[in-house]
Image: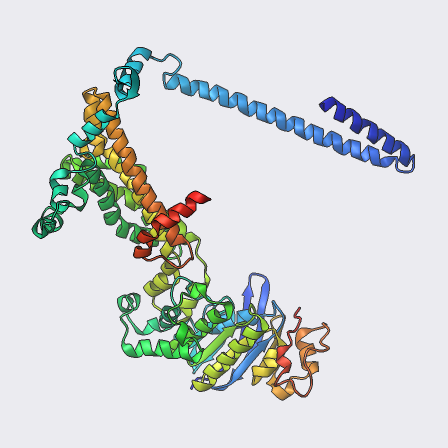
Length: 261
Length: 365
């Protein structure tokens, strides 16, 4: 069971400060949602957590070990899916586990049957078992993102990072992708980090919320603490009226799309 | 006509100014200023073009001098003589002059330019003889040789492409800056540049001491040329790929070769196949050229007939070359357009049986 500890994390690109002294701790199994406007540092935080970027300052400990580069225990899902269009859904899913096999056996798809069952099982989890042999390029945006989730699951991670997984999807697909993401993370006991800019979806799916604004952490709390005031704090001076409906927001408020800045 | 328009414009402009009165007197001034500006710019640009034309004419004149075209040793009579050789005329029924195609066909058959009956006879006989069919495929290895001299040229291009391809992949991939960090990728790019700097025909000369003057040294030379050219196309193609899948493969904890294969090469698979087919087309053409220096195939027939000053036979060989190149291009272009299209691929059966219908549909358009 993994435990994430982020301490004084700072990331600068030249003169731009993308993350400014961000610290938090996340116990294993939590579903954390990172909120913030575009440019608030959400992507940078997730990319740093995944090891794609190295921090300018501060430290990330996962399971007590510092994160120095990408590692198999930490899987990532991208806004642009980043699956390979020329390969089938099955091949894409299988490619999540290549770190367990050698070069030739992964290239020729000569993995153990166990590994191949795992790829199909992951596709089943995201509801794409029947489409396994379809070319990824010919699938819809939502389906492609679900293939991305399947690939991340085949990696057998302990931590799942999702960088705006539904930002380029229509509201219906967004709901379904988030649903599959939460199911997968619950079934497999994964600690999940998901950045979003739709507050309604965030409230519907998240346990815990971390708010970023101009690279600084401005909110860290659980669902009942995420009040209108807190959202004002995260999103600044924009008109938050109607952004979420009090009372039944956990069930159907999520169907309304929200204008984001 | 032009003057009319200018006049009309001028009048309307004046009347407009007049109508507006003195309140907007500064507008025509600004417009006139801008008009002058544009005129000046246009004049400057026209001068520039004239200067460029003069410079080009002057340079071209020098180049003409260097190529001895200013004082050419032209022999028009010899040329027209050779033309009647190229296009032999015969009188049909004693009176109607017509191109004697029969002489072309005779030479093509006599020299086995397009079809070798000795090998083809094994395959095409009635009733089919299983032993001969076996001999054709497995003892005579006749798939290319059945096409006679054209088959030799085609085989040179084919062998060259097949042998060059794996090296082109290796050099092209390692030459990409994303795989091998700068400046080490220039080891591979430099090697490919060096190979490209020397044309295939020269590579054949280099390999003659090794394999003798014949199709074998030509095939190896074409393979070498393929490494340089195809590898370069692969490098360029790899510059275009997206970062996303590479990052995604990195986060899975894949090894470096796995990241290269899954993140990069799988993005360009179709493009690589298409480029390889394109290079195959070019390689068959190179097969003709290297034949000219004696490496065999259609090119060699062409040059030996030229040495004998048998222009009719030369023209017949040219026709055979034309047929070969056009067929290879048609085949390769059809295959490439099929690869590039996102449509559901046709099965080979459908490709053959549906041909008349599709042909008819295209004709009706």
